Structure formats: C-alpha cells, structure tokens
Length: 349
Ligand SMILES: *Cc1c(COP(=O)(O)O)cnc(C)c1O
Image 1 (tube, rainbow, N blue to C red):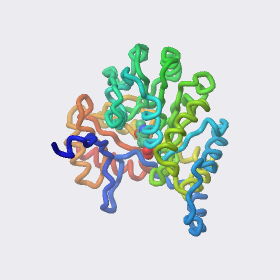
Image 2: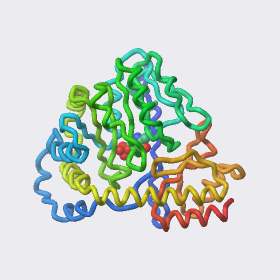
Image 3: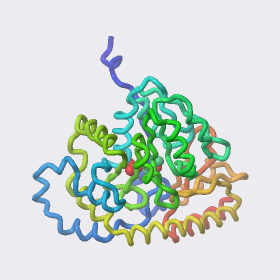
C-alpha cells in the first residue's frame, strides 16, 4: 500500500491567467479597469508598519462595520473573508452537510463543483436553457441546498429577483446561496430578502465593482444565526483570515459611495456601447448585467478569435467546456482598451 491511497485527490479550479508580460490588454478575469477609491492610496502611504507585529482583529470589525454601514444592515448579519472564494468555500463547508444533492446550473462559476468535490458534498448540475436562462422550477425539488450566481457567470444573464424569491419559498429547509459577484453592474440584489428568509446567504466581493481583486475581500449577508454558524466554522479553520492592512483599506474603500457609483457607471456605459459594436460585427450574446460580455460569432470559431486576439496582446477568457466552447468572455476595460479590442475584431472577423 502506498501513502498516495490516503491522499485527498482533487481536480483544482483553474483561475484565469495573470500574465507577467507588460503592455497587454487584459480582459480575461473581470477585474475593474479603474483604481480603488482614492483614500486607499493615501492610507497605504502612511500606514504604520509597526502594527504588523500584532495579529489582526479576528472579528474583522472595522471592515464588517463599514460594510454594515454602507448597506444599512446590522453588523451581526455580515461575514467577511479572503475574497468571496473564501466566503463561498466556508459556506459550502458550513451549510451543505446533507446526503441530498446541492443544486446549481451546469454552466456557472466553475468553482462550485470543485468545492463540492473537495468536501465530498453530493451535487447535481442542472442544465441552463439554450438561451442560458434558468427555469426556476428545476430548483423546487428535494435537495441539500441551492447555489445561484446572479447575474450568472460566465453567461452574464440575470435571474429576476422574483424568481430567486420563489426558489427561496420552495426551499425553506435548506440554505440557498446567491453569489452576487457582479450585482453592482445593473442587477437587483437579493439582500433585502434576508429579513424574510433566514436560510438565505447573499455573497458579494470587492474584486469586481470595487477594484480590489488583489486585496482579496469578500463578504456575505444573512440572518444572524446563519452568520454565527459561518463564523463558528471560520474560527475552526483559521481565526485570522484577513490581515490588518486589508481590513483597514477595505473599510476606507467602501465608505466612498460617490466614487463607487461613478466607476461602476463608467463600466456600465462602456459595456452598453461595446454591446452595440459587437452586434454590428455580428457577434451573438445574451444580455449582460455584468462587467463582461459572453459572446460568440457565427462565422469564426471561438478558438480562432481567442488565438488571434492573443497574438495581438489582447487576452480574453475561453472555457474549453461543453456548450460554451465557441464563446469568449470579454471583460469590460477602459474605453481605450475596448476601442483597441473592437479595432482588432474588425480585422479578425
Ligand atoms: C469573481 C467571482 C467570484 C470570486 O471573487 P473573489 O475575487 O474571490 O471575491 C465568485 N463568484 C463569481 C461568480 C465570480 O465571478
């Protein structure tokens, strides 16, 4: 017998490439093209490194309170983690502890099945419709939990909030996770529903709409009992998930509502313009409520366009998976970056 028989073997999630080369246009991981709120740059310049001798605040209260304040919820309904990936991983571990399968779509954030496999949670992937919409009734049967990315990734399609609420109504006996990584780009958040449904966990992130993917800040809202269960698992795993500078810079970033609105509206404006230009070039895509567009072209393969863009220093994301391998997921960059992309596509198509 070999020690390898006792190893927990997993097929890991593959993150989008973070290229080391300079002067590329990076439209492959849905980062925000604009810098974080100005107070972040100011604060980091004068940060007192002497404080790094001490452990950070395990309750993360400066950040939790700032998030609670921004969204006008009480602090005991907020949980924070090292990106929403960390929050979601903790939530899977905490809430999906049944023999029945957890339900999520076949085309969605490709980390869900990785966590389910890692924790040996049974799961069932439910096919999206041809147009990438969700049929809510598919989630009404018996299950061990439900996970919905809304708007969905990588499709960009939003499930109307009334459908989310119906899924909640039919699933009072399990936890329903709504992953709202892209909600700030035009979707309707399920956050107000936490008052009505104590089994709802709404997960958001600083990585997209708040321009801080590199800092790793994710957060979740839920009934205080739900949040307490999540915290108990966190403290059983790693008490100090978040570091001192991240807690402080995150709190500063979220307190600037004007900057947040300005930059997300810039991204939305660029997205709407790029939609028109892609349409004119013959691209086909479902309507996106996110900071990316998931598009295919009837005359050119996704593989070919991807490779051609790459040779020009423009990196987009392509998933080599059934049903979506012809599609490119194009993040919304600055106006100049998107102009360069459109010029390139005009030459390629
Ligand atoms: C980007 C993303 C996340 C993870 O973001 P973090 O950087 O870990 O906060 C989670 N879910 C979806 C659907 C995403 O697209």
